[in-house]
Image 1 (cartoon, rainbow, N blue to C red):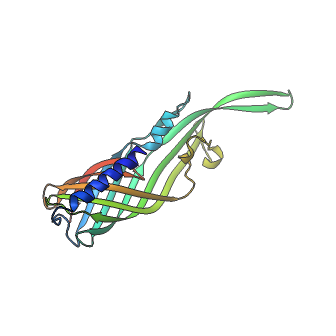
Image 2: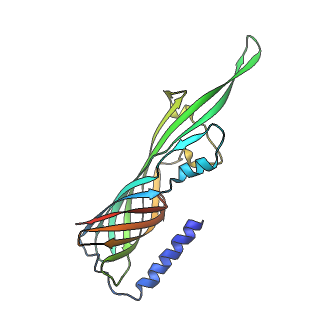
Image 3: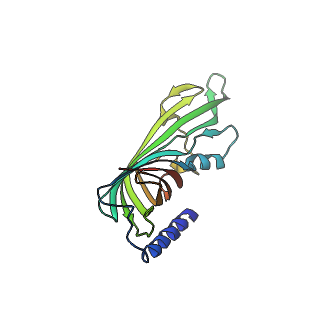
Length: 218
């Protein structure tokens, strides 16, 4: 909720700022901008760690991404965003088995490990605001696309079927995404050191909440 409020404030601020400035010279038609970046935090890992139970652990380093934009005009562009976020988790499950010969139950622990790396492939549109300094670009962007999960499961170190081994945690229902679609909306800024190179910052939802990277302009 706080992130949505922040994005709303930033967007409104950008609109107000652009209404009193000149046309941006950093964005011209038929320009292609490529942006490799890193982002944080990995929300899936953060929530899993927050829901910590004894014997559970996780790993994942945030997000790495590559986005691109082809400018159609000084105010509008089309592009893509590819976002990769690795995540793995491990839990210890107590298994109870009934022995009909002795009419008793025996219990043992299973170590269940899951690799759930995610790749988002998103088609996006960009809307650019007017800015006075030609080295700066301010924009909002959004789009929808595919949500691809590279899922593997292991029980006591032996690979097994992911769906049969999956243990659902109702307090964190998005561990196993219910549909193969993703979306992203973000507010971004770019600063160009030269005609071809610069840096960028984005804040958004549907991917990394915050990201920082490079701009390469062709």
